[in-house]
Amino acid sequence: MFHFTEIAPGVKHIQDAMGVCFTLIEGDKRAILFDTGYGMEDVQAYVRTLTDKPVKVYLSHGHHDHVLGARWFGQTLMGEADMDEFRERTGEGQRRKVMKQAEGQDVPVPDDFMIANISLPEAICFNGKTGTFDSLEEDLGGLKIRVILVPGHTPGSIVVFIPARGLLLTGDDWNPCTWMWFPTSMDASGWRENMKTLIRVLEDDGPEIKTVICSHQPKARDGKELKAFLEYMTDERMKAAPAVDMGAPIDTHQIVKDPEGWVLLFDLRKIR
Image 1: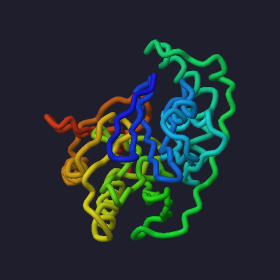
Image 2: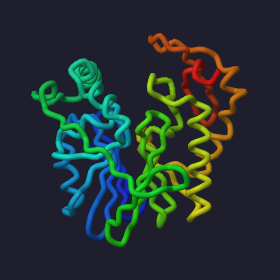
Image 3: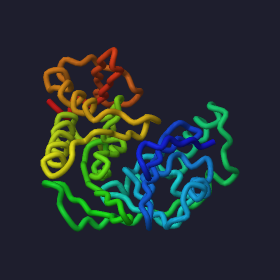
């Protein structure tokens, strides 16, 4: 079952039955869907209960919990650097893992889940720059958004900025629990600097980032929290962070800050 929270006028943050979130951004003439979730339910049919406007689908990156719902759409767009990730994460092995996860959560699995076609996304054709980051602008009719390529969680990760709302959608480039330990993830210190640079460029060019929407949080976060998180995750703390076993041959370490509940999980070898 889907649930949504209206974060701002024209911005609905949707959570699927598996607990991951994606966002519908609606202008007067068009709409953007940012991510599609696990796809256990018909995402397009649900979105059609929220808007009758043409919907363009952008995928924040190629991981399964964001792209398996693309099965319900004819065409999607994604950063070109994540195409191999998409192929792997929509493949048979990953689908079996997700099916087992769904069954463990008592979430009904569609009969055709293992065989449903999921079309390879079209590569986003960026036509501008936001600072040094490739970007493009979409005019939805009375509401403009900026789609920005910000390598970090994956090399093809994108974020979406809505200047009129001071609202940043980070995908998995930032969550209060941020994972930077995947093989294709950027080194954690480089990711941190990318995010800090993005914030500086956006705020120098426009309004303050007041609100952040994350893919694994059903409620919006204050923009100040994102900035504080990035300031806290210093190289010194990374090098001193304890190791954690993620069941993979990766030198995974973790910084935890309570009571905020912040977590940064990363591959230490990449920052040495």
